[in-house]
Amino acid sequence: MKGIIALPLLVAFAWPASAQGSFPLDKPYSAISISGFDVQKMGLSLTISRDAKADGMRGSGNAGCNRWTANIILRDDQIDFTNIVTTRMACAKPKMTAEEAFLTSLRSAKRWRVEGERLIIEGDAARLLMKAGSAETKRPR
Image (cartoon, rainbow, N blue to C red; front, side, top):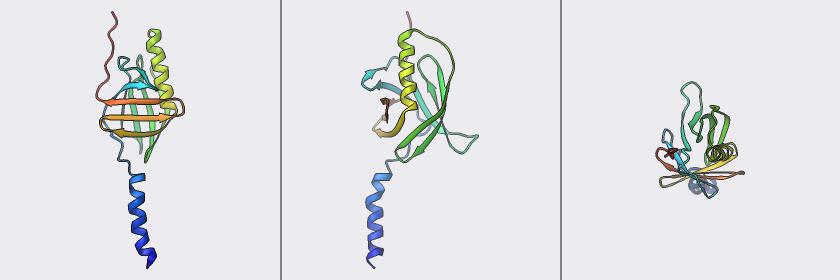
């Protein structure tokens, strides 16, 4: 009898830890900062959607100078970006530096969480802070 009562209590207490909410699919996000460095004007963006051709997730967006796509693996609060591919254009050094930091953040990503309209992706290399909405880009003069 104790086991019958304990199981619902165990499930009730374990639920919040594993159910951080579902990932906000099909919602565009733009990067605010990478490990505290402001990148709001670099045009870095991310959208994750279900992959219509395969049983999984697909991420895409702007890496600053180039477009990117990747396979995404989501498990509770864990995230993994695999097979990241980009276009191959060259831009000014500041934009290319931001792009490399952004792509490194994605490659090393391990965890995600949503706080209001912000998406936080953390990994070994960096902490990526994003806000809901399209990315702004600074126009060259």
